[in-house]
Length: 592
Image 1 (tube, rainbow, N blue to C red):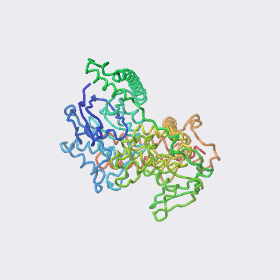
Image 2: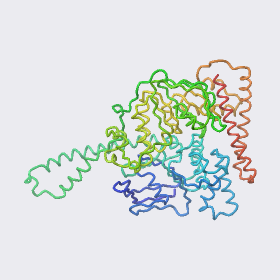
Image 3: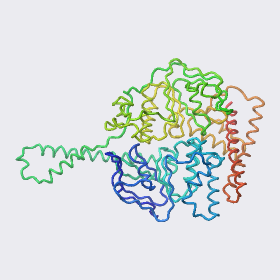
Image 4: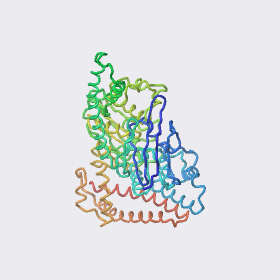
């Protein structure tokens, strides 16, 4: 197996802070490596050195196998707002496409069009300025994947993607022969794509072959062994300390090396490994009392510029319930949160109908996707004036006087989260809380939320996060339609996939499958019209699936001319929306 990358003795510091020093490792052809480390420890800096956009402080060696193609996905994609999606990709990739002959250039453009379609970007002429953050990320991924590089370097590839896009990227990388080195906080994505976990801990590199659970087990073994060795050295240190404290005559003639060894032993004895844990049980982040009335919504609808984002939504939130919200980008998830928290006002535009009634004891803590604006020069301690709480949330004493702008993106997110928890909310709303947070912080947050005594709404693309924390899902289907699914995200996806498999097999979903899906008790029987609609859907869905498979085969054939390719791509996007709407309508009718 060929070595694709050799790293020797590279270092990086920012001022007095040493991120890593003289580290080295090797990546072989076919390795798919996930780099794990706390925020602010140099993950992005390491990736930028490997990609050639930054340099090691100490020289060292970054050696790629000759002639392999490398593609780098940064967290922030630089683009021209005035350019179309297609022109942006073509211009940004010119450095490695300008040498292509016309036939290979055409094949590259075909791959771009196919990937854009599979990522749900069906209009390649749409200006970049009109894209959401998730859509910009899909453009960046399209550019990277279309290169068919031998080695991908990716910094948080799933950030800002909806779950459908993550699952497509996951499948693409899993079946690709590429070599991969990436930073990710998505544990399901890591497990399904990567075969190796690399940990960067206190400036050192540790390699674990296998999945995330294997990493956790082997890491714990390493920490236990290190601490056991520390205890052995401490015992030795105590004996040497007695010798050093003895009278001068007792040390007469003793070798100088023993005195030097004493200071070496002392340094090692002081270096125990304290695992990063947070116990918030004694902090001010506890919730306040929440009465029986929480948030009651009755026949709520919302339109913006003739587009419906919420249609006739009726629901009474309960104390202590945990709701996950999922759906494609721009389906109205954040709009919904703004509506139920009173963040929408008539002067902002749009049209709201229906009633949203908030309970008198309600205290909402709303973690916004956009983050928090900090004052220039504001320090960590000025932002959260509680040293005990800061230390429990992984802000050590030597960071407290740091200006917030010097923190990493994940550290700023963590600090913002802490400002929300300090408000003692009894109704906590988290809009994409996992973006930019490292895995250590995510696990801390999960443990806290599992003990949270209040109601909880989570909008997230992190499937592991949703599976651990929510009891049911609001599925935003588009066009204002919201469906309630009792169960976590994995159960929801399993139900949908079982249904699709049954449709392909017999055209009718087996009775046993219908009985096994989580559901609320039936409130009424289907009307005759609804029975006919359900029957029609069960006949129509297999045909839509067959057309989708046919279109995918045509788009991948490489035989379509430009006009036919555009027509097929447009139809594929429309078909996907039609299929999603039909599936959700079937789900609605099957629950009655």
